[in-house]
Image (cartoon, rainbow, N blue to C red; front, side, top):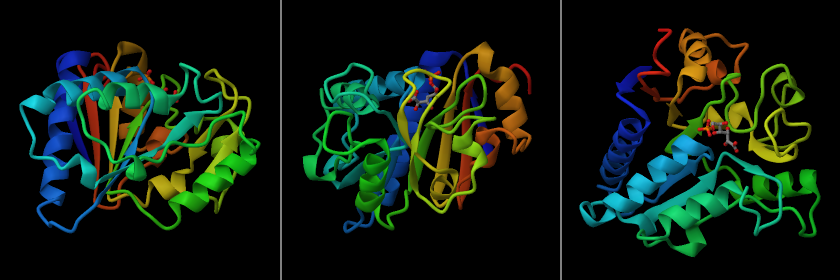
Length: 236
Ligand SMILES: O=C(O)[C@H](O)[C@@H](O)[C@H](O)[C@H](O)COP(=O)(O)O
């Protein structure tokens, strides 16, 4: 496990954007390699996506058309809702980054043919046995990651599913779709991106390996990296 501390949220976002470009271009040194990247929702992730998009002019070492984009969780709301993680992410990235629509895999939205659980199963089928090279995760002050919450059925049930429907989410909106911990932990690398003093306690506990927190139960097969700003690192 590696812990990287940056000054404030903007510096943190810039650090992660830089590392992400670097890691993707290293993986793409093999010209046949398509990188499997799992994205997260949340405010710090959105700052990082903005940095990625803004930095695009300075650094074109990444072939974005050879990146497959997945999501770790989604708010189960209508496609056009501003709450959708995928909508927010794509609005930021697509401003400057050329994406191949066939390689962009948002989770299903509410209002289609599928109810919540069917939508989760559809995404599981789309994902198949793909495992991520890099899985990005935000973390809530309660130690949740993706839409897996502590002291909640999303975390407490043992599951062989890769994707689940989540109801009664403590963080609104209440209905969500989420990857499960077992599939996140199949990722080669898991990167947690955490900013803010309100997250310092959960970050310290999770980094110490407290498996009562979803954030303490996730890890990459090869590497787990915690990217913190100074406020989030304060209790370490
Ligand atoms: O859909 C979501 O809300 C997220 O994917 C969630 O897991 C998020 O990443 C964390 O709550 C951190 O969010 P912030 O960076 O906004 O605190």
